[in-house]
Amino acid sequence: MTGIMEGVERFDSPGKGRGLRVTRAFQVGELLLSSQAYSYVLSVKERGEHCESCFTRKKSLARCGKCKKAFYCDVKCQKGDWAMHRLECSAMNAFGEKWCPSEITRLVARILTKKKMQKDRCASEKLLLLGEMQSHTEDMDNERRETMEADVAGLHQFFSKHLEIPDLLPLSFVRQVACNGFTIEDEELSHLGTAVYPDVALINHSCRPSVIVTYSGTSAHVRALRDMKPGDEVLISYIDVLYPTEDRNNRLRESYYFTCQCEECESRSMDQAKLKARKRSEPIEPEAISNMVRYARKCIREFRVFKNTSHILHLTPASTLLEMCEQSLDEMGAVFDDSNVYMLHMMYQAMGVCLYMQDPDGAIRYGEKIAKYYRKLYPAYSLNLSSLYLKLGRLYFGMERNAECIGMLKKAKAIMEVTHGKEHFYLTELDRQMKEM
Ligand SMILES: [Zn+2]
Ligand SMILES: [Zn+2]
Ligand SMILES: [Zn+2]
Image (cartoon, rainbow, N blue to C red; front, top):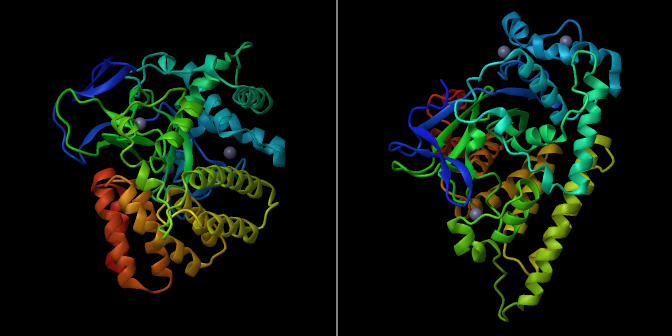
């Protein structure tokens, strides 16, 4: 099974190093490849909602009798997961509340265990071996180095009992996992867990991607977002493509250590629409706009810090978070049009806070406005758009606005038929929901 996969092949992509290309034509929505995870881990906050072993979402999961923290579909799933769960089961009891390894640490522990069990090339390594994934240790800044050292320390602290940790565990290995980890998300883009798929990690980035990665259980599916002809490079987006060129590249350099040279980054064709200023009788000075961009970036950063700490420590009440959003929207609104991506970013955050506070009217008000502009700024088959439609659909449903609900679910479905495929569990769920209404 080495090196061969039907319809796609590894090649040297000019200027990018290795990459993946198609060897035959693919139509929009067609599946290019699917890959089992080499290793994966369910997020701690999703325990009880999803099976720890196959990520199936259902109500009546059975609990691990020993730790009472992991949940499974049935005995088969539990047995299948034991080699991995045993790394955590008794440790969670022993540490109690103090058990808090990072998700990357948990994944690294699993990968080390898997590497011992699996000597041959794995089904997820047809084109690229785990060890061949990029690590970028040489480019790392101090902050990242510290995070990584903390991840290694966590490995020793929480996993040393069931895991032989190499004395000198190369930091580059932890970095490799952190750099190549895929976030598994549900249909509303909630984070479910982290996984590594070496073959999928071969795919290079573009801000105008030709394919998209979605998940079914713990497997990754790569589907075409447009018609492709033999020889076309397979390209995914590593980042949220909503933002203007400069922001996208800052993000790419920070997390992936490269600058993008895709058509969109060269032409910057969408930047003007993304940074649209408010229409006034007197045109707004460029300086006022660049000042406001700086202010917007600062707000986004600050809000992220507040939101993250409020989650963990319950320090910031939700109403304060909403006030932060509203205040920055007021300030920015003096210069930026409502369709400006920084406005949309804060509206999206505000919608999230409203959802959390169970204020459906507030959430709908923000959601409807965001949807109007997302449609213009995101590519046609975008998960950001479909997940927003699903959220709005759910909100309408809760308010018994069924016609509007069905309208939203239909829009989500049209996108997800391409991104997830018609047979996907999420699509059958959607059909069932619409029939019941
Ligand atoms: Zn299961
Ligand atoms: Zn257990
Ligand atoms: Zn680009």
